[in-house]
Image (tube, rainbow, N blue to C red; front, side, top):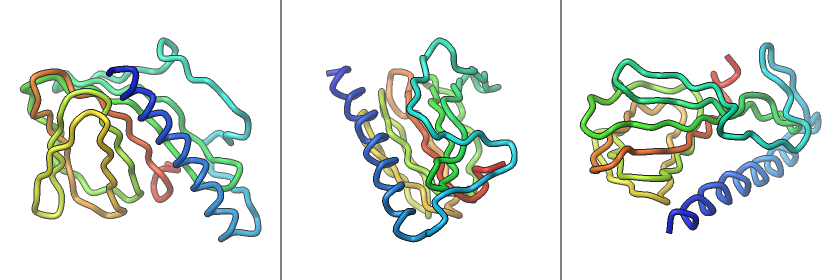
Length: 157
């Protein structure tokens, strides 16, 4: 079951990136961009788990930076994997100036946005639109693990 969820998460990521590349090519004749401080992700690459930078949060959560850069087709992307322990106070609600897909790998989170709260379990996918005030809260009985794929907007910073 765990391997099926992992396969679904990574399959979604690769399909999304492939589709976004095709959409951008259709919309842009240039097909490339340079963003200060971001690497151009122009070749296939593996990001081994043990070599990622881990940030520890004051509330006990963790975040591993997977990748940050510009795709050869021009999209600025940042990918990180986060873990929220059981029973902790979540990060404050915040407004994003980019778009995000959040793929829940393990556990159950509550996605608070636009005056409502929705539960999402392992294998579920959340889309956070540009400008959405939101937060995630672990409502399960195991640590919640999820992958965040940020695209465009202030992702380049």
